[in-house]
Length: 507
Image (tube, rainbow, N blue to C red; front, top):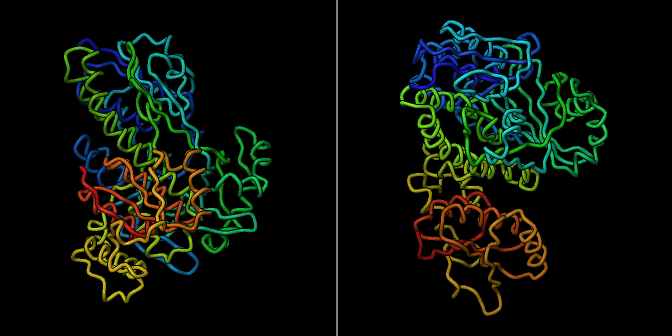
């Protein structure tokens, strides 16, 4: 192996974990972590880790995982709208304070022989190492300096969010809207310590401006918190907070930045975690992705015969998995951006829509894990008693329900009178300018839209997103798709994304 010395820039979870795993795999490696912040100045709230991530950490390093779990809090999830609630098992979901996670990872890195240095900012150009691991976050200076080599792109979202904390432990993770005179805010919250819960709030830009938060954001110093926003949201979510005030820690309104890179390594530099990629917080934490990057990087570096082969293997193994996660995250981000428009749904049907929003959880899978919620949600979709729902075959049951003279939800063109349909090919982006124009045009025509397009699954999922936009504008919609993707079409029906479906030949 040509790599004998490694410098890690960034002492977050990904950097620390990579450093430990590298030393465990090859104790002869010289590994130094450079973190510009001091442990006592670390900020942040809770970090969530799901069951699959825990399994990956268990296989890579059971000792570190044991200490993480000892300090973490398990929890289930709930969707709450007004007084209505739908609960979903967490499936071994846990959360841990970011400060505690960093302490655990630092301790284990140093135990493995890693030199962890705090308090000095370093330039990757000045580091004399065979390999420089850039784990310095979404605003990575090292990635920026080598932008041409990495092919980095940053896409800025339209909605806004802020991270805060509640001074008590919630009983479970919570998704809940709060509507004020300015518009609707949505909370994502979960417990991570005996006396703390993460409390993230997001909002669309119009509501944000009407509430005056464009001004408070401009007035908030870089190292301060938006106290006006914290006070406003403490009142807006008073019922969920039990009257407690929200706590800030460099809390300010932000727009989510999606980072993608064509190439994850260039010369002796390699990207890890948020420096290489980001995925919206609603589908999975950056910490999860960074620690899984660390596992792949460590194996590649210590098992391949030279640096370039190792880095090519690392990128080849991780990039496809991360790109899939980013695609799921984009769909989830758009779903949450438009959440207020569907908050009228009964809470169980809304939960079915939430779980199937990115195409990662099928009706069958959700029905098997959470039958009470799915049974109620499907009954609400069809307008029938819960006893009439067949959870043994939810896809067949959903598509068999009648609607306004149609004997089932699968239709053909023959079911419509001449002139009753308007054919639309989906524009490829459910939220772009072409889609905006389409929604405005067909909403005024008063006809049913027959929405068709490419047969690939991602295209169909995007078509269902556009169909929901049309439905929310008052348009009756038929989404056409391949028979092989009937489960996705059925999830679209049950979630209120489309009224009817049509089956076509295709993959």
